[in-house]
Amino acid sequence: MSFYKEVRTFFLKNDPGRVRLAKKIAANFKTKSAQKIVMKRLVEVYRSGGPANIKIIPSVTETPKVAVSVEEE
Image 1 (tube, helix red, strand yellow):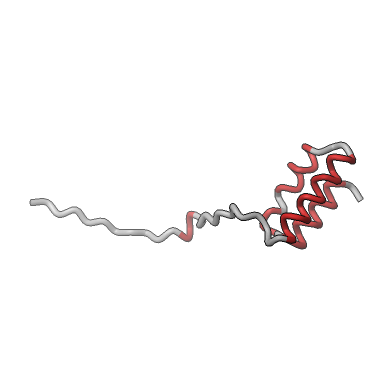
Image 2 (tube, rainbow, N blue to C red; image 1 turned 30 degrees about the vertical axis):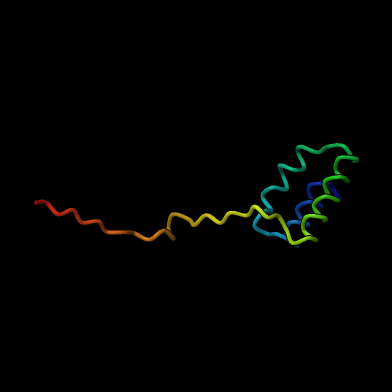
C-alpha cells in the first residue's frame, strides 16, 4: 500500500474531515523512516482524543443575515 493510501485510509477511519491532508502529508514525507514516524505520531494523537486545535468555521450560507436600520434625526 502506498503511503498516500495508508494516510488517506487512516483519516477516513479516524477523521474524515481532514482526509484532504493526506495528499500534502504524503508529498512531504517520502522516506520510509519519515513515513513510519508520521504514522506513529498520527496514531498517538488520535488515540489520545485527536488534535486539540480544531476550529469549526461556519460556511457562508450558515451565517445569519442581520438587518440593520439607521434612523436619521
